[in-house]
Image 1 (spheres, rainbow, N blue to C red):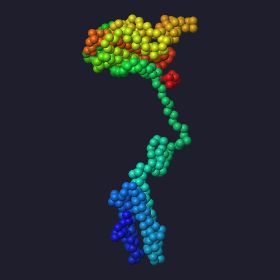
Image 2: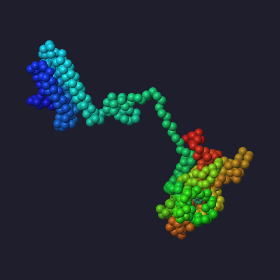
Image 3: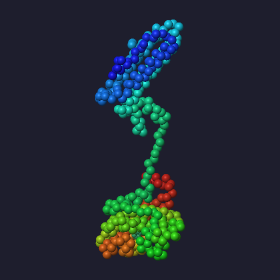
Length: 413
Ligand code: PHE
């Protein structure tokens, strides 16, 4: 890869040492230097190199270039020293010396520039990684690595990022959902801002029916211009998800629907305007009240322990018939009604704690979703998540779940 002989630059003998002659000679030398240096990595010189051997060959070419210009014995730099500086008449020596020093510096500079260019090219192409920092960034030169990490004092203490804990309400909700997933239920969700239709009408609450009053509904303002069924409100229970699910799925179906609900209740130790429910719905042929009892009895034993008993107490919901409230034997007094010789305060000495509402899906509801009540039957249930969490963890104030006091929440980590 040595440059072609005929165009190769050779140091000329100078006719005289005038400034003009020296300028001309220096100009030619610098042009040659530049051309040869650029040719080193030009496409023509790198193109047909054999890949395996490419870098060795390129470095050989570079060394030839380097030696040609700065080899101590016979390099061009040495030649101009001998032929120009040494042979200059005494009175021209200072000027020629100054020019020589300049040229020598330019030659050195060009040789090291070519060397680093070749180095950089090889590192980039072969993806050299000589250093990887803790953030996973990699560097191909020590210089780059140092530059990127300077300013980081590794003796400073690190930043502690505390692990958060699952909120007790979410934790309870997940546990409950898991119990039903294990029974083959899938999970459905619905919007928190609902229409009157899904929250009430399709659940068999007719307009102006007094059962609506039990729901302490928060209505969205300025909906009066819409037909009643389209008016928006904050859902008061997760039961609208029953309707939404039946609209999009055909029986058989088994779903649980966890979510946030809203009621116009003043906050106190047992009430919160925002709380959570888990809805359940199973529709198939020949589903009976026995299935409902068995399912909920099993779920309560999973949640509160196998010694817990359940009791179904007659109740009313417009969308279930018959309806029941489910009570579990008091987990504080074991259902005895008194503890340590005193009446149990948790169950008001009754031995039972009311936990959830349920019932067989009212045939009227099937009419809203195009199910045939003569062919299918099903059950539904709905439970308050905070209420279950309060019992499970012995919390005495529902507000603790929503105040965001880390000292309280930390206990569930
Ligand atoms: N949605 C009812 C409530 O919030 C609970 C319920 C759900 C009752 C499903 C029966 C069946 O009070």
